[in-house]
Image (cartoon, rainbow, N blue to C red; front, side, top):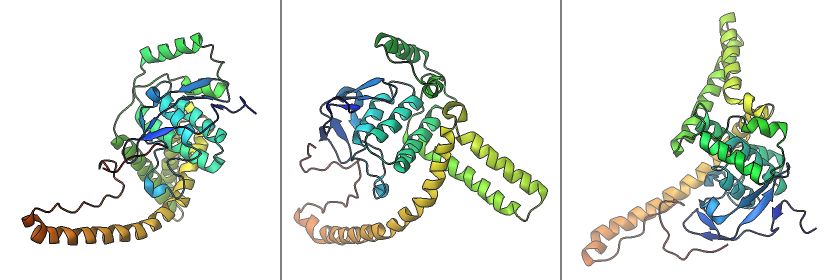
Length: 294
C-alpha cells in the first residue's frame, strides 16, 4: 500500500558513480524509524559515499550495495548529525525494514557500533551540537524516544577521533584482548588456582571493556556474540578466498612485469607508452573509462 513503507518514496535510489567505489546520491528520500521519527536523507547530507563500507574481500557474505543501500545512506546522513549510537540503532532498524536477515543485520550493526566505540570512547561531549539537536527535535515535534534510545542519547554528541587507523587499531585491540582471554582459559584447565583466577579476570575484563553495557544494555551482549560468531564463521572462509585471489594477483602482476620489462628494453626507446599498472580495485586510482549512473 502506498505510504506504508518506512522509506519514501518507495522506489530505488538514484546514484551517480564518481570513482571506483564512491557515489553521489542524486535524489533524496526519507525514512521513518520504528519510534515514528522521520529522517530526511539528502544529497548534501550524504556527500560522497561508498554505501555500506564493506571490504571487497567480504562481499561474498554481504556486498556494499543491494537491499541494504538505503539503510547505509540513512546511516551516512545521520552519523554526523545525531548521537552516533543512536544513528547506529536507526541503521539496524533500517536494515530490518530493508529485508536484511537478522544475522547479517546484527553483524553489520555490530561493526558500525564497535567503530562508534573506537571513535567516541572517553571523548568530550560537543555541547553546542548536542543542544542544537535537542532544539531541532523540539521544533520538529519528534516523538518521545523509547527507553533504549534515551540510553543511547545520554552521552550526547561526542567529538570523534578521525582516520582509518582508529578502526584498525580498535579491532586489533579487541582481537588481542580476546586471544589473551582464550589463551589463559586454555591454560587454566590444567593450571593452578592463580591461573584460573587470571583467566576469569581477563575474560570479565573483555566483556566489560567491549560490551558498552551502560549505553547498549543487553544489545551489548548481541554485539559481543556477533563479533565472536563473525570471527568463527566468516574469517576462515575469507582466508580461503585469499588463495585464488592471490593466484590471480600473481598472474596479473607477472604479466604486467613481463610487459614492463619488454617496454623498458624496446618500447621506451621508441617513445611507446608504458603498460598500465594492474589495479585490484583501488579507490586511489582514477579509472579513465566513463562512469555510470545507477
